[in-house]
Length: 486
Image (cartoon, rainbow, N blue to C red; front, side, top):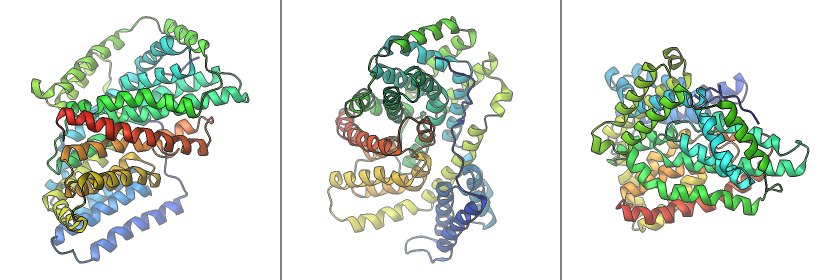
């Protein structure tokens, strides 16, 4: 069993937009049409013309992010340009998003992610868990899930973390079960693939910095006066997250059991890999110390008085000074800078829409239409609709951009406790990525391993959703009650 550790941490699993250039032209025309129709419509009562036109550009930008006639960064830049050319906002207002602390926190996390994979520390952690737990097929899935959990706080890309660090090891394990035409080997590989992927969805929900869309959700919540910090996110997610990590592989093992249950060769191979890697190198030791200090700072940022983004900048400075990171590599991390553009654009538009009163207008309109429905019943319907609407999406971030803010406002209009609503929808924004083999950029990577059929993926995905929703909504809800979240 071997693995190449020189994988691009920025997310080599990014799936390009499908279709020919002609298809993309029609998609772009459709995006422009959506924005154009809204632009020429008179603003509804309660909204000024400026707010309505900014909303039209925002909706068109999000539609472009979903349809992807061009890359996300390009669509965001076109949206910014449209705002400037039409005079909807001033230049200083448009560029304000690029100074947002949360935007820079995500960029820093992307830059830090590269160090984990390029130094080989990520695979080393995986082999360490495999050497202890890898004697059974279920243990293999727990080993890879534990690796993902350790890496999750520092790598804000599910694609980079699971697709870049975990998937190559998973493929090596799958080949160790036997020839690809062996039904038992394929069944076992399929089980480990599904269990590992579904567990990685839970780890993405556990940290503010484990998926690029999480800080975006936190920013949208902030537009409604709801503060979500790194520490408060972790405190809320730790109990349902750990339970989910334990229970989901067991459920998959019960309904889709592997035929090869004992895998002693995997543990032996992992120990051989650890021996080949040798003792921790200087770069790995520095990484462990730096990231340990960073987690402590993030978790207790309020008591320490150190902003999360400042702490992330400090970690990057340490790694640059010790040459664990090189500036030329930092400058070439295209996914980090691509995220910087589209993330800053969306946050800027959302902030300006909030300033112009669009969420308040929407909340008033929804509140009058909903009536006296109890918030618990209403929020359950909202949460399920938000969760299962992901069948229509191929990106967590696109789904968050399109629907999180509106669904949060709808929940608040029902009287749902603010932090409860914001966190639940934020956690669901990760968990729904397990539904289909196209739900997130990482899903096609795991599906491309060739061991799981589309039908099986959909069945297991729906089954896991029936497990995860009660864990996070019911058990999580009781835990949040103890924490005073609602």
